[in-house]
Length: 109
Image 1 (cartoon, rainbow, N blue to C red):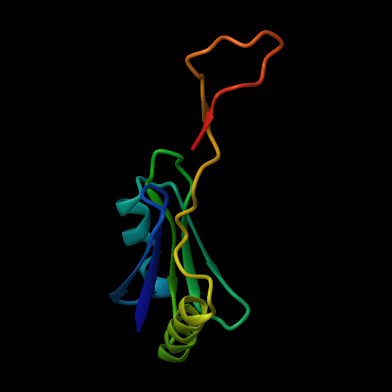
Image 2: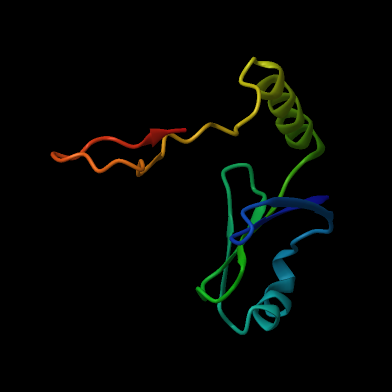
């Protein structure tokens, strides 16, 4: 079963092959220095949540192939939805050469 690993820095999600078994709780505790919580979601899939803030992992969750396909479909729709690039032009102002009393002024980018 695929595992979804969510990282804090950089904020990305990775998909790897593996599984989280109920009887492997000691293994996960060893990996995260006895600082993890293993819970089940509503569908019965296991989630490992590291409790130490020093950990770069936000959570590790079991996912099904159907859930992965649904995520891929939504991502493709978002890319095709006319949103285009997420890069936007900032509206910063740099001070102009002339000093203007009363504020304002500047060169708009």
